[in-house]
Image (cartoon, rainbow, N blue to C red; front, side, top):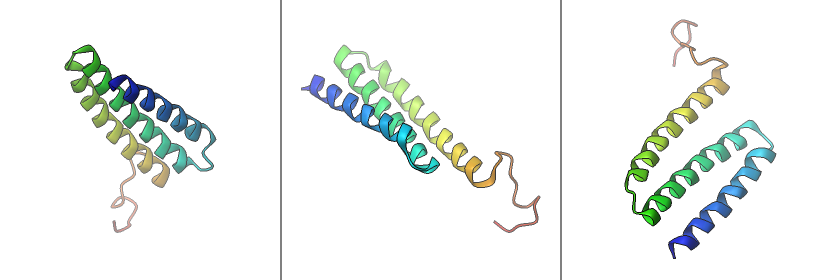
Length: 94
């Protein structure tokens, strides 16, 4: 049963990769990249459960935190054009 879950996660990952490559806008590609990261976390958790190695879950949690930080950094870059943007320095109110 877990092997079927692994196969389903791999199929979903392939579909997300297609969306990331063919996405009409940058934000569609960013959402697809985030979904690929989430699918990778699920695959890591399933693989750790199948092999009896719970350390894979810790790796998945770490990857999830990196995924969240990466998405926020990409969104800030696409919105402001730089990661070091400061609203107070530009004289704007947040």
